[in-house]
Length: 162
Image (cartoon, rainbow, N blue to C red; front, top):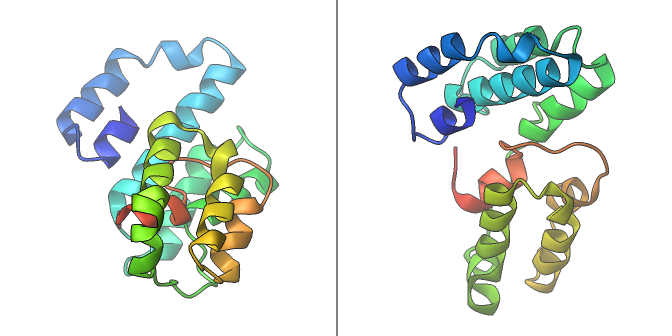
């Protein structure tokens, strides 16, 4: 529900109701607690719309609070970097990348997003290189190991999400 809210497919009221209705589920075991908190945190961060132009320290603080005691700090930091990197300037997307090979790049990005198939990010990096992308931040992010989540800044940038 948090992801649906972040994607504009659910209202804040629907999200709150779902959290109340399902509060018992996420207390069942450690793995469900982790999944619940991760989805809630990512959904909250995405829904703030404040990756670049908003109160970034508050977003990071809230994300850390959601994930506290569920993930080690290193994993929290990786997720924060996956959603936004406050120390990296926002790269620009070239239209030729998006139109290359009949729109392969946005199609790949959308499939990764829809299927939560972030293990395909290296394939996206290869396609971007073939489309003449030389942005090291974008290519390196797609190839970095570790957990990626909905809200991944590269996927969202390619899909035109803010």
